[in-house]
Length: 90
Image (cartoon, rainbow, N blue to C red; front, side, top):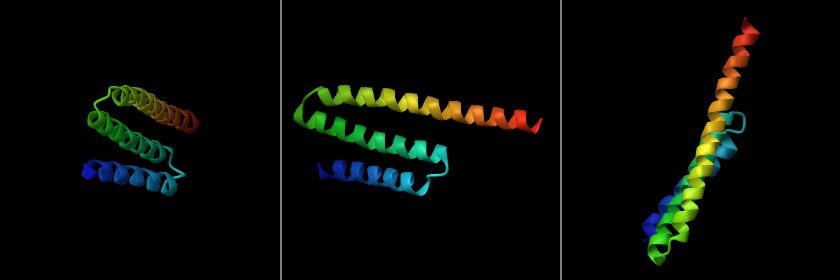
């Protein structure tokens, strides 16, 4: 039981370290936030199964929707950055 909590805590700490160490790179920052959201998701799913309640699983679905929109935002930033550089070079 404690293994799941420690795993989620380590994932969250790796995400926090990534946020503090990669402040200049937006993609690494978004990936670190994604890792933190997945650690929170892991805790919600674990505690939802322990107490036999569906609210944790519902919150996990909402967090997955937020994470998907964050990934779409990161992809849009990368595409617009490369398009802006292509226009500027030409």
